[in-house]
Amino acid sequence: MNVHATDTPMVRAEGVSKAFGSNLVLKSISLEVQRGEVLCLVGPSGSGKSTFLRCINHLETVNAGRLSVDGELVGYRQKGDKLYEMHPREAAEQRRDIGMVFQRFNLFPHMTALENVMVAPTLLKKGDKAKLKSRAMELLARVGLAERHDYYPAHLSGGQQQRVAIARALAMEPKLMLFDEPTSALDPELVGEVLDVMKGLAESGMTMIVVTHEMGFAREVADKLVFMDGGVVVESGDPAEVLSNPQRERTKAFLSKVL
Image 1: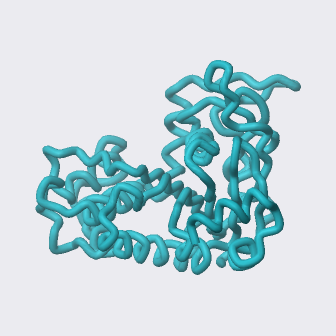
Image 2: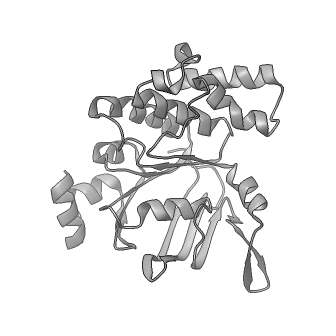
């Protein structure tokens, strides 16, 4: 862990609730992630993990509570004791500092791996083309794909496409990376290559929140493990402790099926 000398957590959720119609998916979630920490969220399907992740970068709006990243409210501005939702353009600007990697790779099929990594910084004019290309090649090398820079997604394996997606998220130089079950769509033999890239990111000090079913990764890489079910945090703590000695019956029942 590489926690910087500041008291402000990278992520702070305070009583966050989210409903879709009458279905309350998140029920007053409160947690913190410090800078340089890796938090793994585990739990059954439908427990609210992915929804919580999407709330962190305002892909979903919250119905109650507050979410802040690096000390700034996400998606809202406070005036007096009231919160007002930001204009979508402002929220999008805020989102640039938060990288997100989804289950599905969502690469542009008509662009090469290099072009996929370059596209967002190019559109946002984050430097001249030569500099952006050099940076994109560095990122592809970091995920082990420099020699495939001119391949289109259709000619890459699922694991390679997901590694390009990680490089693309890193191209925006985010302060926080969110991973939503990044290996669940992959064939089992391709999972390791993606997890290895994520381990390298963790070792470099990147703050990460990872929704995952990979308990070995959670045990080895995470600083904190949170088990969610039914929209609430059931149990949280040191990953090795929670996985080997869960305190709650619901956690025990879940882990008995996945470990």
